[in-house]
Length: 479
Ligand SMILES: *[C@@H]1O[C@H](CO)[C@@H](O)[C@H](O)[C@H]1NC(C)=O
Image 1 (tube, helix red, strand yellow):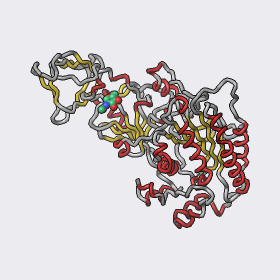
Image 2 (tube, helix red, strand yellow):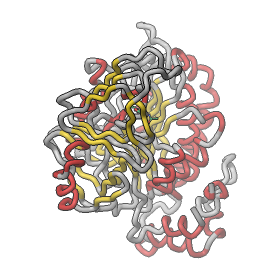
Image 3 (cartoon, helix red, strand yellow):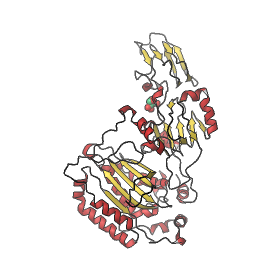
Image 4 (cartoon, helix red, strand yellow):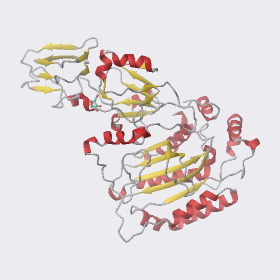
């Protein structure tokens, strides 16, 4: 990314946001050992068997000598130049006792299974394995996503009917990109299309991008149950047991987690991609946080997380942090990172258009039955956060909170390690105090972006240990 690109992405005027790419992981390639019941590719002494009644499309990269080959009634082999099959001479020393090797049933891979997709911000990221982590419903293609089936692979995907339609922006199959419904429907009727996509449902190709720089909803909520039953099909709908006492339930995730959920309220100047970049570059790139998985997205929050007064549904930004730790340490790294992110929001939140942040966490260990979950701090934290508006109160609250944390650190860990959850609210300080119409948020960003460094520096808070890492000037951003 270059500076100009980032400058552009900061301007809140008609932003074309980055797309997310979803890559289908399983393939039906002949050379993939896991597609065969013996976990090996058949060799010259073997008989390669394809199930008679299972239609399948199979990509064959190289030439294979086989003793016998049984084909399905309906199927295709994709043979690029230089690949094919040979009748084997039986005395191959590397394949002495020939057996019958069966190709696995390719119908078991469902579109709705979130474990079968990788997502990334660009096709290049997909290639080098720089994947995004997301909650389950967002791990299958969302409404504005580009879907990719790798070129030079064959695949078969089960598309079941669901309550809500599967929408996507575009779909690429074997290197050909479809951006409208008519073309793709046509393709689905072709012999290859029929073998690659089975089932009655058909994804709707909309070619529509997310136009909202604060982020777009994934749009898969209506499929939550179907996605989770696909996700948990091999464990009889059971989630793996979480090792913390009060695991958290992120919105859009099938199973409860040990770790952290941060919920953000935001203003119109918030830019999801900019903030995601900040989290990835300023925090996740640190060695100590390298094992943490971070998901960030806009979600519809039906429960009123922020206040008991607000009843209607609202859109919030949800950040989910999960670390690789187990047992009593589960979630401890995530909690540390969560605290760092909250501290960052206290100082720079307003720059990013974050108006309120709340953290919930659950870490490893077992709560003893006598220990009551401590919620007093949580409640007062939320109340203070909600009525904040004047910078004076903001600063004193901030200082008070920091002291509180320092004094309570020992106790804090003592209690909270044990799997209870604490709610912690950080509210950004409002430097203006009221909304001045001349000083609209959009103009602020414009000015700041135009006049460069000087304007941004004023926002730096010297008492904090942080520098304002303005993404425009953050050297990390050129990674
Ligand atoms: C082989 O196939 C399995 C399941 O279809 C898939 O998960 C895996 O990524 C494939 N491996 C390669 C090297 O293509």
